Image (tube, rainbow, N blue to C red; front, side, top):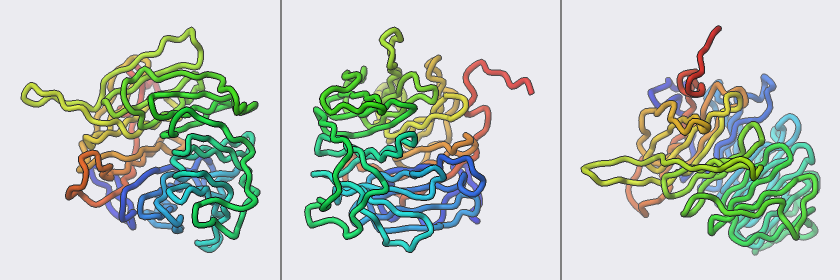
Length: 352
């Protein structure tokens, strides 16, 4: 097993091209809690066992894989999406390559969410739609040349005013972030293709990179290319706010870096951000204060995820081409042990 460094334990057998997502198993079961799912531009979807630092399972999505997530009550299956315009399901333990195509779009599929209460897979695409799928219904024959699948119809097809860039679900709320700073929020108990529950725009002024719901279900955080994060609420009685991050001043010049990733700590409600400056910060959002800054990584932070216990943080150090083609470090995924001083809210005292 690789030794941990100041960056955390580096996973063996990493992707060979840009990492697009990292997601720990949502299950707290002993046998699955250290499983980490990774998608990447090399078309690969990989499942790692963090405890032993081994690549447990992998498959080729068929095109650049832009997102992947666990589904099912025990996280016994995974779904992935990408530039082939398809949503594909794999049951863990089956031979790699045995994919079921459970959905498709008319353009690349950027992001996925799983709504456990409804057993729905939700996909957001650059074709300006969000669609929901029954993971039990598939077309095993695969996709045609244009990505369409015969016989697989979405349960819901929600038209959007812009390309979908990021998406997250918590409780019965689904938050969709799009181009032109637009945000649509849906009640997953009654998905209405004609009307979102809330149609709004983020406080931020430039392109959205990531949206993540608060663990308490009261709102969501948005990250953008302008080096800022906003806290926004479902209730109109709560006032939203934004704060600067992932910036530095050098010789009187302020450099602003895109914020690519947000990950909330599942217990404390604090959160981590990762940017194109290679920095991972943790924050107390309610107090608008930084809690901790880790030693900068050698390239952009593309994705972040805490495990279900909040004891580990996965960090994808992977160049996101914000400066175009150039020489850059190899893509790497690190898993850090999380300590109280890095995630406890400001002013919290451990009295144990």
